[in-house]
Image 1 (cartoon, rainbow, N blue to C red):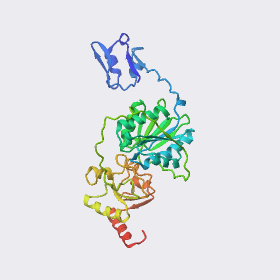
Image 2: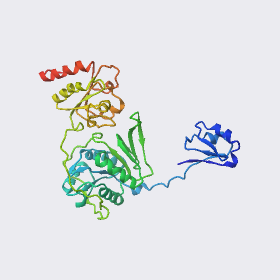
Image 3: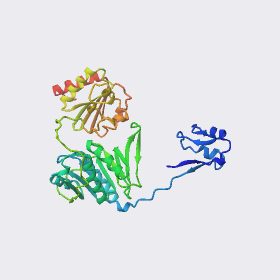
Image 4: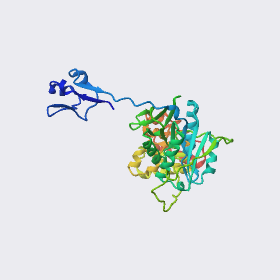
Length: 397
């Protein structure tokens, strides 16, 4: 980082210098002028103070990295046992898109045990090389062992960019790998692009979704980004199996773990809003907790699930697993019906890729109407019962 250097012999009247700083970031200590941590680097003291009293010094530029040594767009294949998480297919589709633009190959990294058969399936999704690290020591996810295998892959293959699903495992693994290589990691990207020189353009909502931040790490390799499930489009499965499957030999020392798995208890299967084709979303327009039963009935009639916005979770009306938005879940249903949802940008960012959006709101100026396919202006306590009745009688809506 750049810094300000004070040359005490040229300061002169310290009190006059103190009056120059608009942030009060300068102090007199033992007869010397000192710049404190409150400094905003506005450089007013450099411009307005005595010539040479304060000097702005930039750090030496970091040596440029040889980008030709880092080639390929890699995707970490997230899985439970040998079942590949759908987000991995979505990332393979995006990787292929980026690779074509930058003229790069697509790699897949698959870490686990008895996974070679599952790895063969990846050949149907446009992967050039599938690196498989199959070892009994990797049967269960242990962060240190998986990080060791991941690290060896990067050292041997040197991919220019790595995409990881923002799953429970991905969110543990990606930061550790980024720290090991002292590279950047952009979490929960919603848009990815790339330059021909393989610089990855990572875009994600920031400041509560009020802006879209464009982030790049042009002088670091590998570049890393995590992406939530349902944000990208999954490619269609090709009938032809293409690509090369490569066994990645990892030294036992690299995947040695200090963690012992004593027992694995499988979590009971539960319905999630991410997997639902139909969602009925409750917003601030719901007056009391008991009224959620009305929306539940609508959701059940449509074969869907009930979801909500953040205020309802904070009120304790629904579990956080039902929340849609930046701080909740990203969804992409075939049909989403929002009831009393204003459409704040934080909420919209989590559902704007839904196929059909029906918005019900009594506020004609509600932002949700701008993106809705069907806008119903009115009281949800009048409209929803009518929808329920029409569905029950089989009448056209």
